[in-house]
Length: 110
Length: 121
Figure 1 (cartoon, rainbow over the protein chains, first blue to last red):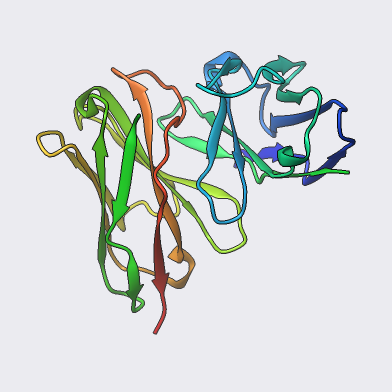
Figure 2 (figure 1 turned 90 degrees about the horizontal axis):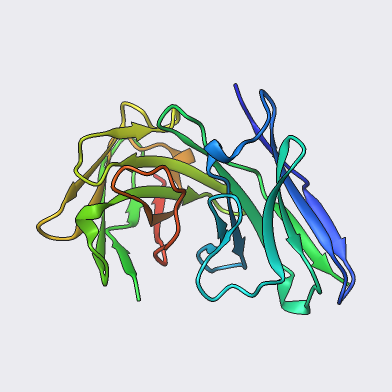
C-alpha cells in the first residue's frame, strides 16, 4: 500500500525560506504524478498553490514555487510571511485512475 | 470566476443513504473531470472519487468503493455523489473540485466550500 509522506510539521522565521516535501513510499515522484500543492486554513476549503509540479495557480505570489527535488516533490516558500502559517497538502495522480493526498504539513511562522 | 457549490449534506443514521450535489458555473463543465474529496474532523484531505469529463471513466478510493457512486449531468452542469451504507467514518466535509480538461490527469484546481456529512445514530 503506497503512502504519500509529508513532514508533519515545520517552522520558518518571517522572511525566511522553507521547503516542504512530498514523497512516495514505493517509488520516486515524477512529473507523471502531476503533483499539486494546496494551502488550507481552519474552516476553509483548500487553496490551490501549485499544479503540474511547478505551475502557480492564478493569483498565487511567486514566492511559492514547486519542483522535483531528488525523489520527492517540493514546495518552497521564499520570504515567508505570517499569513503563510497554514496546513499544506500535496496530492499525486497514482497512474491507475486514483489520486492520493499526503497527510499534510503544519507550517508555523515564528 | 469558477464556482462550485455543494449541497445535500446533513445528519444521517448509519446504514442510510445520502446524495450530494455540486452545481458548477463559470466554466465549460462538460470539458472537465470532476473530483470529490473529503476531510474528516481534524484530519487531512482524502481523495474519494473522480469522473471523467464525459462520464466515461469513474474511479474510487478503496474506502468507498462499492458504497459510493459518482455521476454527472452535463446538461445541468451538476456533479453528484450517491453515498450508500454510510458509516461513522464517512463523517466529513465533502468538497467537489474541478479536475483536468479533456482527459488530462491534472489534480484538482478549483474547490467548492464543502458540505458537512455527519453519520450518527
